[in-house]
Image 1 (cartoon, helix red, strand yellow):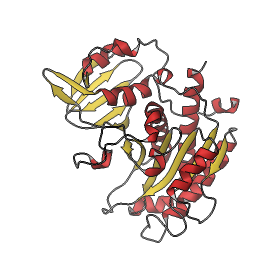
Image 2 (spheres, rainbow, N blue to C red):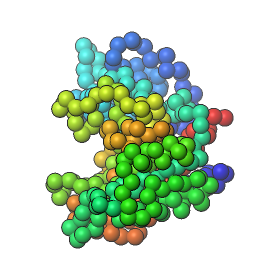
Image 3 (cartoon, rainbow, N blue to C red):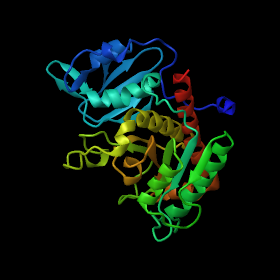
Length: 322
């Protein structure tokens, strides 16, 4: 796959510098102090407005004080629980560090052994299920099928084997989609969607990966939701790598606002037999984004953004295996 190195895309990891091992992060509790993270990455820690900022010459991490939002090199990454003060120190949950922040910044320490070659693309909805519907009748099932075909052609041009869960206006069940990924021995699973919301003001793009065991999903925080472990938790660190690579490139090429890498237990990703992400390419319930999603040029940019994310992930795994 030498062609993977020819086009530019956003990297999802730290540039070049040597880093100490994860064991260098002190403490055995459920939280990791930001001062410990700063030492690990040789970063400066400072307070800037309502954020705590860690930075060095390579990377910048921002944590929202008492909030779940973090930004890694400018891309939003949602934590399972807020960045909080405990005693005299600010910290985040150890799981958010070990299965979120660290896999993004030090992907070489977390990359799976298997280099991705088989990609399953799942155009959401289909058949009896139209998905979200825009103000001028654009249906999610049609929009995402077009984006998925564009992704398929582009990835095949870079020597990936690509399988679609549906090739027309049919409705495979959610379990059928997962079983197909299992049958073809998928290395990556990407479910493609267009969002809908009660408010017409909601806008932007977002990428979901599987929630870590023991935590609420991003959209159910504080509501006592499902906290169970699921099959796809085997790939928590790789999911973070994939989700960040996809979201970074999707934001860059779509030009839409960044709603972040989020966590969910959607059936098609929580049961996936490989690293997986569900991508929301914009809101059909927002007039401006509905107009864009009807546009071939925008769908082409979205497709290329996700493709660039897959290629960035491929490169990270390949480098880690050398």
